[in-house]
Image (tube, rainbow over all chains, first blue to last red; front, side):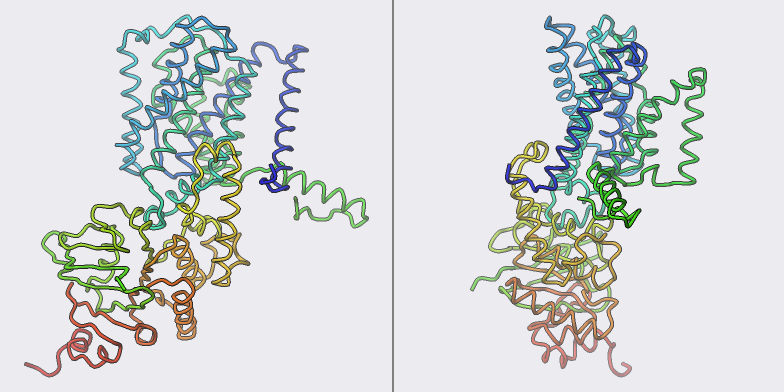
Length: 337
Length: 257
């Protein structure tokens, strides 16, 4: 491990312990019944909404292409995972992760299939074509026998737990942020910045567009798998284009190109309707109002392209505390290790 | 010595317009060639053809001995050609070092899986690429601004960063599209030194499009003059300066007739 710079290693350890700590706290709260079945359900919802938003952010925010068919990929993953767990007879804690893996593969395969023709377009045209593809997926599911058609797929076991959701969210966050900070991620970013210059710099842009689209679709599939095993029924009408729009709203609100923003935005937009239970009817009104307000006052989304770094925050805090003790008082954070 | 760039009978038609015809050029290693001509003569079209942004209607291009016909732009880049753009095309909202590291993409080999799992190959190759990128930036005196956003750099620095990025792809032929555009005489003089320095240090052949005659006459060993898609003259700066055809293309015919 001598390869990893000390700084980065410290950050990794810090993030890992923070993730473990948060998990511990949630588990204790569940143990002492502060978090009950309903709160668990909300937590799981937050989880798959984070996965949906962060994965869409990969293609919409980091690659700068605006697809509108995320709900379609979510449904592919949902049906793939549900059909698998329904047809095998394994312990839940074994068949769910396998189902989620299958969901990833199935959805990303669809991502490649749809991405190859669709990604030749850009901007509004790409949005319209992917919207169309998303609807096609839904209509096909509606008309197939083994998917339960319009009645929906019933009898899915409730296997999604807070733990599996938490693990899936962590994997999504790690993989996508690791991807962004690599040669592959830079290739994706270069497409957003200037496609012609990217090609001239030796980046195979078609390959990377399809790759990012497939990874994005794959994680949407995982979210679909989690969704299927908590709702216990898959109804194709739940995956219409309004759902794709909702996911896009979460991403835009959080900030195109900010993973942290997507997380914050997904969590708040999931909790908001729950807190205002009676307000649920007006969720779309609140969405539109929120969107309009954000577009007026912060057009780049709540977080813009800002990424929160625990390492920086702790480093800054440490410097401040040291400043206090050395008597200078309130030294400005900065430096941060 | 075999030419690094060998272009024969290149021609392209846009609809009914013959934008370029019968274009021949052989560029040897480390040569500096100028491409001049009035506006609309087809100079940038030549660059777009050489990098396969356009595909020729006829003729062929051999780059370091390989035929580039039908290849995508990024493949031709791998063969050893790199370019800058007339209107700067940087990855504006990314850092200066990331701009260079994007062009170092193909010098790294680690897989998608290695990136996502942060395998040792990731750490090693990233560290190497960063070191290589910083070295390149230092040639252009930009190592201090490596973390700055590329779009925030002053104009001259953006031009230099574009050249640094092009060099990061490890080219044998470097195409510069109006590198001195928008520069004052002292900046242009600096640029001339930089271009010569780049040629000597990196051993690349350079083909440049330029309207600034002091730069063209000052550093080009050979000049090609294009007008209406045809080469109307070629030779040393001295020959070009005194060629009546060139003078006519730029200034019009003498006398009324």
